[in-house]
Length: 213
Image (cartoon, rainbow, N blue to C red; front, side, top):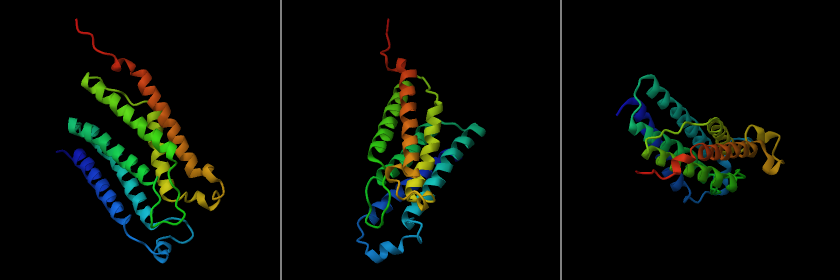
């Protein structure tokens, strides 16, 4: 196993440990005093969510790092090509699902818009299924422009929700579902939807049955 693949595996392990920790925390009955103690001043940021945010940012960086090292050192492997998108989807989608559910240790925490979460996850399922079919026919699907925009916006929007809208929360608290963190989510969702449609339209031939003479 080369270095890029080890980084990818380490990312998957870190995500798994984080999810197990969050699962355990969800069963602890926190008191009102303990909840208040977890808040960082008047920022609205919950300490546990801040830790998740840091893990997310570091994991997102390693997603770039392992790909960069694999290409630079000519260490691209089939295992790496399989594990990298798995780690990417596991990171984003698991935290998106986590942000859908109010946790017992938070006070006034923003949640991820349900409709946006459904679109993001369904888009990933459709694109991954299309890639699987293409791979079985030895066809490589190139990433499109909107897919790259979607990835960048997700890497910004998820931390914005984890940090409860900070630093924008100091002036947009009364904006409802038009708070800046939510707008970032909407933009990421729109880019995701457009990229998914482009993937399907541009690669629709992959879905056709092969004709054997």
